[in-house]
Image (cartoon, rainbow, N blue to C red; front, side, top):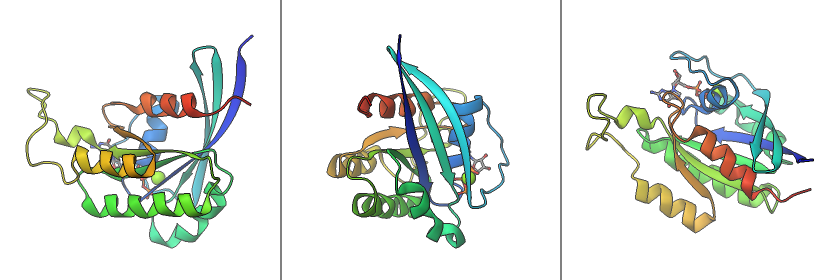
Length: 180
Ligand code: GTP
Ligand code: MG
């Protein structure tokens, strides 16, 4: 019999970086071009099998709009995992991600597993060649990786639109969660 573990996971990040879209991709394998902003927070669950382990993710998708900022601690306080999301084409969203990581390390559970996620990779890609177009990105891979290394985070660049690395983020988190 395989073991089942529940994992409380929170998504944090500036408005419109694609938090809800990453969750929609992970839970329903779907994408919406004009997704409406989250109000307060949304709760969704998804099961995921990693080897012999089944993980039930209990996902709190928070609202990035500034007027909801004071709600975030309610959701990250007892979270075992967090996705801190930025948009690789928006430098301000990377600065915001830095702040979230700092706040989590100060206020959240001591052994929380955090993944830093640079989303919207598809915006960099030439549809003809599939290669990254030079000069399109605002946050380099090196900057993302450096922050992750400094702070002990998992690090991925993703696209909720193309599905790049979305399952991989959750799988990597699942692997780092200790067995109950
Ligand atoms: P809040 O709920 O306001 O905090 O925003 P959010 O972080 O949940 O962003 P949301 O998922 O609502 O996405 C915002 C917009 O970006 C939507 O129009 C999405 O379709 C778009 N978007 C999200 N992810 C991607 C992506 O990977 N690539 C592209 N091209 N667009 C994306
Ligand atoms: Mg949202």
